[in-house]
Amino acid sequence: MHTGKDNPLIHCGKTVKDALFVMTDKGLGAVSVVDDTGKFVGLITDGIIRRALAKDYKFLDEAVEKIMFTDPLTIAPQQMAAAALSVMEKHKPRPVTVLPVIDEKGAPVGIVHLTDLLRQGVV
Image (cartoon, rainbow, N blue to C red; front, side):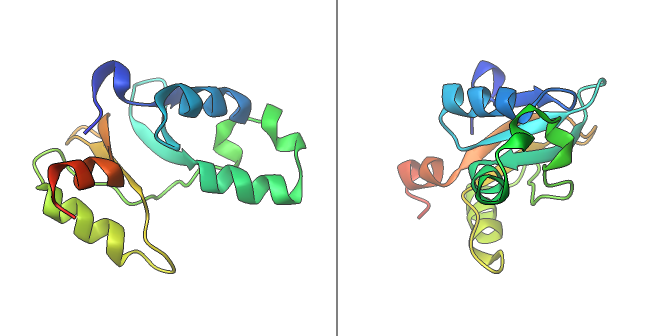
């Protein structure tokens, strides 16, 4: 799990372009979106951005709230890596590669990437 400075976060008022910079810096293909209180409110993935680019490039200067997933799959910090894998692979229409880790207060405390599970031997 990527936590602390390795946890990709962005404020909901920032632009999609800003989110791209965070994603590029962290290298995980996703960024958790938080509100003024630090509560998790959504997720931006490279897939969302690619699909939006196929339609129009002008969204890059819009707030991330315009295109983020508002109800993405998440996992709690106490859940096991095998549970994360199960959630990721059962998603339809296709599996997901990242899961935000959200604590009981609704704050994003980390993010799990499929490659993390591969490194741990879970996959």
